[in-house]
Image 1 (cartoon, rainbow, N blue to C red):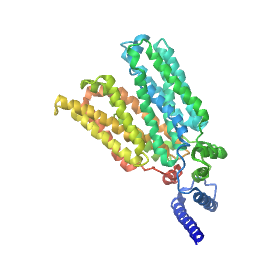
Image 2: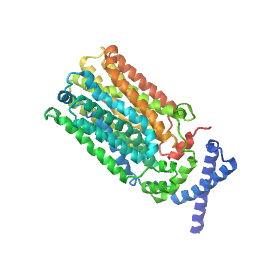
Image 3: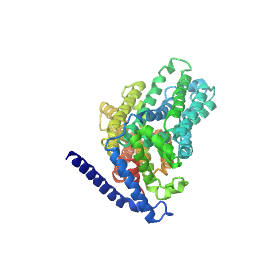
Length: 511
């Protein structure tokens, strides 16, 4: 009797799976038009055969999730690039005065500005090349190529005795900074199990925060110890060297290997990352989407005007709104706002860093529970409220003490809410919604938009503040945040808990 019940349970489970796959196939069959050389009957037979294989493996696989412990070490190594990203963004903030004195350009505001901003120029170059590098040599080697200019550039900056050497070194570092974030987002998205992909994606923002705070901490003795700024640059070569060396032992992205036709290696890497029982299912899921056209050249025109232009537009707009929200302006201006409230600049930087880190840690716990869209929506909404508070603090309607509370409280709330969603989500969401064929190059295009707007916000912020005043400027930033709320509500899809295969099937454009 028990055996009959057991057999009936298995039979019932198979019938449920068959119903699910038939419905799924009918819903998406019109989307499979990517290989016109095959006739429809052959394709239908192949799909039925593949679905049968997935049924068999699905029964063996059960409903349990793969172990997150297998992929965690690979993800942690990848986030070293994000730590370096944060470190190099903040490494010159404290030592800039000492650098200018030692290298002979003290008082030259143009030269001081170049030391900071030339890194952004290098980052744009690295970012534009990142998609082609990641697709050409693989994700692991792309990380190593990211570490190399950081080591060379930091060494040049540490050893130089003139402004030219400093600028060349910062330019080299910038190319590594531009290459690192898109490759990290790609890699973590492609090697993580679906049920923890959001949590792992939040590691990128946390590592960036730790890098910024590490640069602040290392820079503390710079005013007391002559030449300490050189140590600040030398220190950064250590994690860069660790990244390059550790990547030798990390798994290559199975998605990239499969695109190269190296299916046996892809399955081996899936076994390292997900376990043996999950590897075959992951491979069959991958084969459902990748139908042999992934080696075709992806042209820029296809990303901007072709069938994938909508998802690229969504990604580019998210990064544009992220920067137009005023986050970098807040970082640039935070010391002045805190100083007006009687708070020392060192303590101001610590407060901003703690708010950023706290928000990032909270987002890590919520990313796979609430979802990407919810966090993004409420993050931009909270940022709009924070900007309105800061604009209110800049009016004559409140007393001096009240203005200080509005300004400082609004700034801390802004950074906290930014770190909850608008900071970590775009870099995680975009590799999820981009099809495998265009993923690396589309990320390069979207991240380039980020760097261009970042540059212009940094360049024009102080001038706009002088011409428009803080009230109008903060009101403009609040308006961009509200625009972001509306854009997210209308255009962003939820990807929580879904495999990359499921997301791509849902968003796959029709020819």
